[in-house]
Length: 84
Image (cartoon, rainbow, N blue to C red; front, side):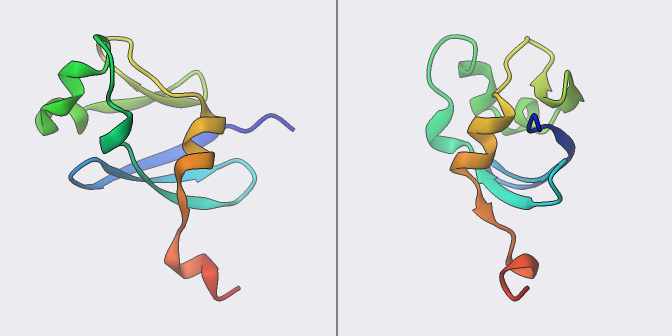
């Protein structure tokens, strides 16, 4: 099964709540991942919040995106799932 982002929600700072097609939800803090020219504009939180789900991952208007596998790997299990 290919990992896909099916939903994402902005929470605060550079943190997204990301739901994957395997049923897992992760809190993904991308603050330390905004390296390089394509990610530089995302350091503006107003720009960072303006993402969409495109091609099964989170993408911004300037074409910046992260592979779903990367988002899953750097994300932490969402607190409501830890007790399961």
